[in-house]
Image (cartoon, rainbow, N blue to C red):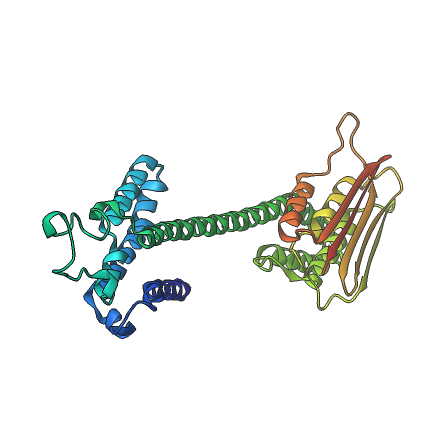
Length: 364
């Protein structure tokens, strides 16, 4: 039996034992000489219990899934009504109680030959006790029937609710994984081609930085393809990726662009969503570089005991007539933050007076 099903078995066993104790509690003061042990060992007691157990499982695992949950409400209500009429007519608890109820003097009519019992001294005109059997109502049996139906409905509703929550969680996880895969595909092409072109130029000119650039590119690609299979990775891996990314970008920067990159605090015990910060760094280099104007790119990361703070700032350079854009990676990062850092992050993005800045605070 799978481990995940063990709690359900315990619940059913406990509920079954509790139900089987109910009639004993009702009859505890009326068992007479029979005692509780004799009641439990009687065939009538087990017929009574099995009747309600059968109704419970019939309703919970067949009527509700096959009729109610499939919107066959009329058929479901008709069967429940038929079962109710059968219970009301059969009166299982009353029969069980009568079977084990000790006779009392007041329950019997003692003959008295000297008394007047009717016209001509004959028998009494009618029975001393109630009317026909089908006119009496067994309140306990009806109550137990209603509780049995309600319990089955509650179990199925709870199960459907749990299933819905699991499906939502699974869909969110699949969505996050798809977004991460999309982000990988987005980073790889243009960055890879530009970097390979730069390394090719270094190789042609026999620059001493060629081997080191190839190693940095290899580190980035390993991180992008292999090290981001988990939802969270060590912060140091993300910082190393940013550092290698910046160093490779420096290969194509002119002297007019200054990069201010600083990391402060302790990174060893911190984790972060993979490829989260590199998204903003890539955006900085994509829109913050000019070969004609002096510009400064600012990238700062601070890690303290309770938070991780990331900040980047750059001037936006776009061709004339082209609307300013920040890339779809920013929107992707915002969705991942909402999913993986619910109520634990603060993202402030500003785009004013030709400057773009991002301030992200992740709470521990």
